[in-house]
Length: 86
Image (cartoon, rainbow, N blue to C red):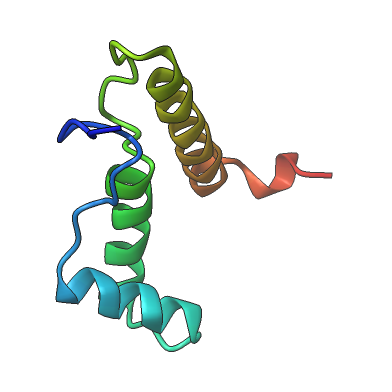
């Protein structure tokens, strides 16, 4: 199957700074700037949260919706009141 450039099956576009931020985060050594960059990469690029999920192929739409669901869960936890969690 030939993938369109907007296919949710394609790898997210990243650069060296994105990779370094993710690696530093995974190792517990990320600076504040790297932490923000890593989270932004995950939510905006890997999860494509702020893009359109609809694709002409229903399976690609399903994958895009799944990615966005993960992004919404991450964003939710960045905003939830910790006092509201039991």
